[in-house]
Length: 519
Image 1 (spheres, helix red, strand yellow):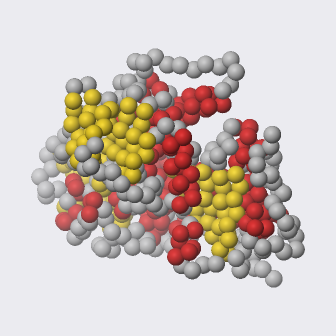
Image 2: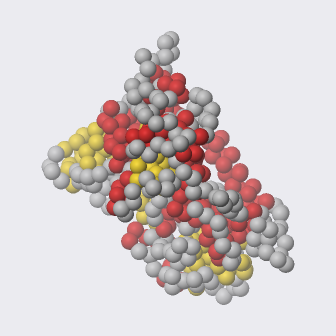
Image 3: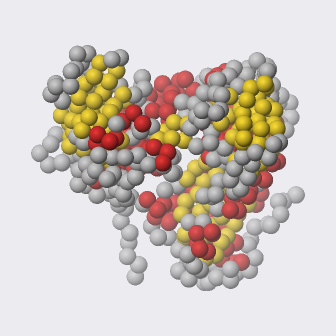
């Protein structure tokens, strides 16, 4: 008889530690003493969190829920970090606009025409995000307030392993804590030989200030950010060239999904140039000249340089805490996000890959729990990945490359959106969901998706994997019709039937769905 699985208890739901009372009070903003001379007594906390982006915010709230006195330090003018103010929210707003415009064009709706003036800038296209940013900022602020987290604005640096000095406008104030969490995020790499000007040559932080939508865009760096922006601008009608010195596109993806994305880039007009390195970037009148190592030259009116990011640790004076940053400013941590100094933790972009908002939040939660002796229930091997390319991509679990490398006997099943009524309704005939499962015990091992709604669709597979589910669950389960969730049943049947693994309760023979789109 199969033992029932219990739902793990998240530490965010635990009661405060014994003998401590949770404080629910107005958010307290701490002032910085203007005449601090290095001898003043430091205000003491149980935990100091440096940074209030996704990782820092969740760490601070988690510790406060455990009844601890927490100080959050924010360098910017508002809480939320780059995720809310200059990265995730604004860039996804641009993607939404690009989806609307390209969706209308590609689906050829009768009687609908969409156009914009040549002088229209990106600020005009994403102006509606100001309300979203304000709302998200208010939500983060309210979460800190409701949990009694104290907040100070300024730049933090270590003065000792337990002491942080916060400076602003020439004033400084020391704070001490038994535990410290570093969540300062990352910034784009800006090589000195690249003449950034914020007008024609940009990094991803300045790109959204473009006054006009470019006609010809060169993107240097085909990582996640570069590829996402290449897709967006191609959808807006730009001629885009995407360059990268690496010969594989997004090599952490399942190869079939990466190849499908490369095809979509090509079909949308993006010229993908892998294995090409840039020798020189220079301004030439109203244009930018890009000279490749091969001596080939490319002219464009706008260039986006996003070849790497560096962790924002340079100003922290880590050496005074007994720490040392590695390549790219990254801080090394263990499985619980603890650094080489046991009471100091690091989470989010400062520790490197995957550098996603969702994973950073979970890292912050786990680190805060571990810091106060509460072991978090988590599934670190099942963190989902979401790439907001056009089409979007998502995955959870292992890839075919990993399973082959480790000698795991597996089978795969696929469902194409063209086989699903929902895919036809939304006009996405190229989407794909792929399931990987063990040939012997039939456990689900990985889910990979590309197409409309992929980042939402992935969570069904994630839940089944978390509870050790078998691929047969999708065959026996009923999904709403018409939905993308039906892809799971189609892919499961495809994998079971094509691998010769059909058993009682599972139909034998070919998949019951057509291999070609209906006429």
